[in-house]
Image 1 (cartoon, chains in turn orange, brown):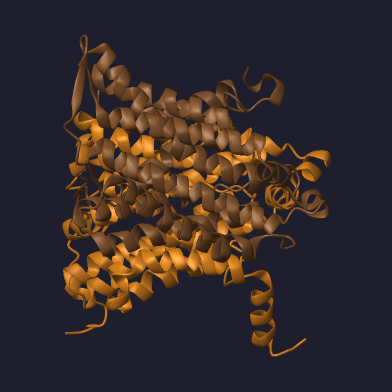
Image 2 (cartoon, rainbow over the protein chains, first blue to last red):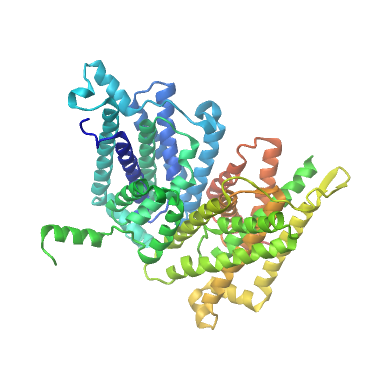
Length: 315
Length: 294
């Protein structure tokens, strides 16, 4: 069989890696103003459920559903962010944690809409839909040497890759803009930033809702990649997992959480025996990182060193 | 019916108050939210369960055992997850929050490995003893829970306000450096605070076992989240706020379940936080001490 290494399992792990990378970026954006949000799992849930319900019950096209889910999550971010951000970062962390729990209670109890604890099944899967469309036009995956399940997984992977690159590029660009400089100033010293005329609350709410929107986006992509969502996908553990991506990978540069998400998705898959102890390791990792390397594995100094050695001009 | 629910609510509120006091003590002294408190509480509950149900020892032994286990955990928590972060230049205030989240996840999953995900029966020898006063049935367990919570709260308040150690602790809470200059061994006070807070969590764990008759590895998370909600509601670092907040939450949960929907029971605490953050951002008792409580 041609391209045997390109099996759906590897592609699925790679796809989860990309979704986690987007989630990692989502918490990075909020952290870049020095705010810790533990609600990103909840916003992810909003995006996922909105996209899933729009496409299963109202036959809305997938891209429209994903867009609507992201925007809804962003709007929820503004609603949660405004009351919490009037206070210090600790309140935000707890209020967002609380938001996640409330949302989970709503998802479980509002059975008529959300299907309760069982969740929503048979969500159109992006790859399958695209294959069906392509087949209508007389395309067959065998013509490019792929089996149809390979084609489906590959399509999902490529779409997610594109989305991840776009998200990273957008926020990389943002960090060099006026907004990004305002974020950095607020992170370094809120009062100094306010004294310099930066509308601190505005930017904090902006960063928070951007993070929420991005989580919702990741959630919507997740719904259309796995074709099944349930309240169990968006618990406190997911929130902590997202936090671990940023803390382990590094929260000072956008590539940090991307690296963290990629590494922490692949390693437990590759080493099955570790997988069972995943959360125990996550816990240890958080403590050890805070003690020995609070800025995470990837920090600007490391990136500079890489760049220098790449050019072959050691400084 | 109403009076029965009132008693249930007060019992639950007493437990919540003790859990919340554990958070408030640590926050008051260190300005740190100890996210691992819920899990330490859970280990207290498991220690009590093993002693009472598995070993068949009497209840006071369970309390002592739970206190020993949780105090030791508090000591380790302070030594390995909090002290290394303290006084480091440029350390973000999120660092300790994140490291205690790490401890909480670690402990929750260690408990999962040790005890599994299912419910464990917590058998109190006198669980069925009750007496009827007029139309109301009161269980002995409820009285005991109430008594222990009241004693614990009164003891803590007295210790903080009247003893030398309490004074040193308040001085440390006021200003770490100044207290250190004035001869307070601040490291020791901080360790004492975390250990005492954890031990209170241990007591609360046994009380929860007595009140609900079962425990599992999820109670740390759900109880911990409620404790957090209470300290925001009552005002961060306020001892009276934690007590009042606990009581209010216990009562409102009991009445919502009795007269409304049980599915949203766990959401009440967080709706309350969002409302209080909007209306009175410092919490109920988070004002200047003079107005705090008469």
